[in-house]
Length: 458
Image (cartoon, rainbow, N blue to C red; front, side):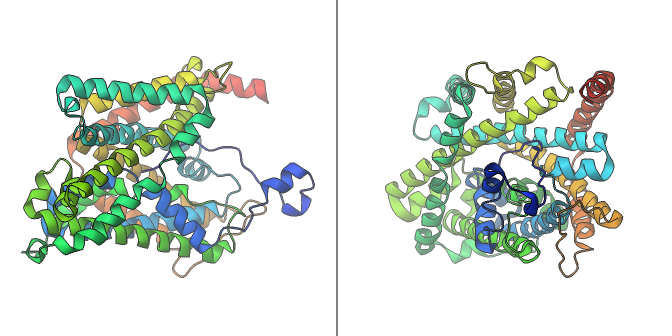
């Protein structure tokens, strides 16, 4: 899982008209990113903290047939990524789901997509907060008690809020310091754990039911979301028509291979015990590599999940800030600290909400709500990509990339998303329904103030 944010103003004029030093420097990286660079970006923003907990959830639902759900998720994310790339290559404004849906269907649809994007962020942070404290409790047992867990959760989010209020530079440094740490322990587990795999634990007695695969794929999607943030629409990519589809498919292929390796090794080592383990990957590493291996994986989980939390704590409050700045929320939430120049109220409000969610719920329900919100945002993007193509929308200076079967890719994405959404329960739809109703009420209530602000700024 990666950071979510509303769209910045990054319209790009024709390169031939750029004459100022600043403009030239902004285009210094134009067409410098090739297939491998984009694929590495996909891997970096996709692999977060979810994979350290999800092998248990998938094994609990599908047992040894878990790899099927990984392949379903990889295929869906490839369709979504290619749909986003089609939409992004037609627009000069970046911003992901919010920008594409707004351009295709208007402000209200774009606003609802922005709200869903915000919901993805708060629930994802809450979910990973549980993973972080749960694994840290294996090292500090006091955190396993109810009081200790609550204190650890509050302390963690208070520290993240403090760092990000003090300045964006501090938050960015904290976010990037842990980037490599999330890959190293996973690779060590996959390679070193092969010697301890029991083939009998990987035998699939019977094919899983399609409904079970769909339901499990929604949960597992938590580990695959983020590819949309690695796609840079416009001129930053070298030969976008070739680089974008190849980079997406190569990056997702690498992520899928690593995830499959992790799941197979953990399942092969732990067998049925995988479905009941609260620290599945450290437990598998402990059996295969001994106490040192378990300690390494525990450290890897803690570092990786905290790195994810720090990155999201840096980025996600900006979405809340933007909604307040644009008149959808009380104006004080858009306050900028006079000394540190950070959206300090948005940071505190956002992380307080995340902390409460983490305290009141567990990983599974929060991850599921996050994924359903993501699927709804992706659904809007896929339909938006199809609509932009149908209308022939193409801003000056953009070149839509073409690929075989490109016209049907968004439609295939829509079908796949609807198939997964068919397994959502009434209670889960109710949560999304209440969020949508509340967001709609805010949109209506603030319409007059936003119109007046627009007239004053015109």
